[in-house]
Length: 406
Image 1 (tube, rainbow, N blue to C red):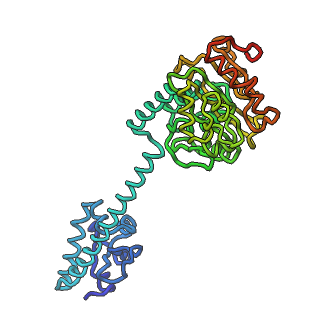
Image 2: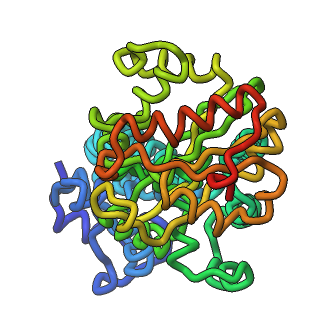
Image 3: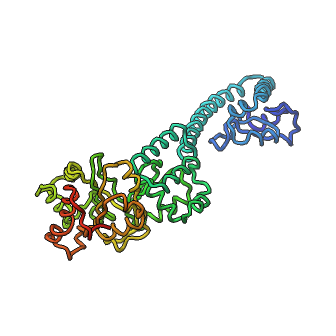
């Protein structure tokens, strides 16, 4: 077998371009590069010019000749030249074995690159672009959310903007056009995420805030910071087309949020009062869904005035940065509702603040809160002057109690 010194001496032309080279311009090139564990032995070495050596670099010989097919003929002519000068085919046979190994390595590299490319394309599709079917799905859920009163008009405008700008580019200018600050914009996005599930899920924080793959990093960081604050999110309404009375609370307490149930605190007197009104003494002992169905059979719907807020604990006095529910849209969807009962001072004040324009169209009543925090009211007080008395008069179509009317 020929050694490297003799191979260098016999190689008067470049193995890749056929250029005639003086001995001081001849360089060793590894067929399988050293970066791929190629050995510095004669069967893995060809002699070439400096230009071709730099051009090939750490590329496998198969990939190099595939990229520059004009150099393939020169390469095989070079092998024949060495065989002719040595008088045997030992060198070309040895190189052929190395070429076979190089071909196998080239195939594995190609498959690896294709796999890596597929992952990159999949990631790009999930994080950058929205496919047409995704847009159609979002638009469908968006329209469904409009019809089901999940979102208010401001949130509807934000969703319209999202469909046109899925990366929320230039959202600060858009927020200014809406007349709201950046923090309010972020809170509205959080509400949309929790109410509709329209955005693609990227991460779920402990309090349920869903982050979107397409939202820019700036907004995501703000949402992450906000997720550490005491955020509260109200439930979807319990209502049907036969409902005539809508009872509105302010915002579910801590126990209710944990259980994801209206009035879940065991000391809250709401379900006991409802049981007395519905002539069902054990209403508070029924399962939650059975309680809701009982109220619906008696044409009573439940919801809250506030959609989301920041609050430490359960006290209404701690509520900050509140966002109202879209009660106007709810009333349009369920025209049989004629009476609105507001459970507590905060529900009353928030309703009057955000929906004063509809007071004249509905019979609205302010109720003493059934919360255990309202300790000055006892059950007999509720029976005498609060919820049951008013509900009975509403159902009987009696004259409303004037001192309870807003």
